[in-house]
Image (cartoon, rainbow, N blue to C red; front, side, top):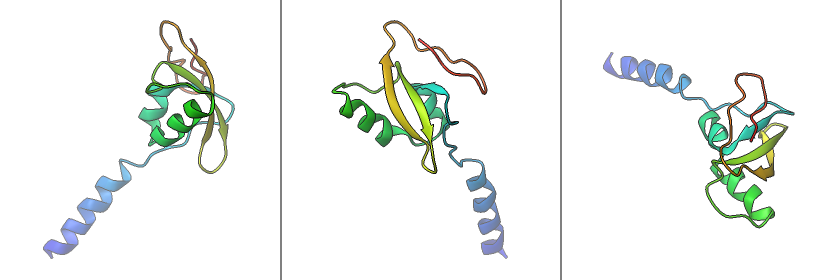
Length: 92
């Protein structure tokens, strides 16, 4: 009985932490990509491709989409990267 309750509790908890891919054709601040899911490796790769360093939080990325939510680096925001809101692109 306890095993069944524990299994059910874990299943319910796990559904609340599912990551979501970026939405195709929208621009995202790196910090917002991290809030959506585990984008650390993709952000690091996108920065490395263009020869940049840093954590990507204040960088703008374009969501190319696909099954893995592919992204590419667009630009570094000199002051802040701004959250454009749900279903809208972020911007510098």
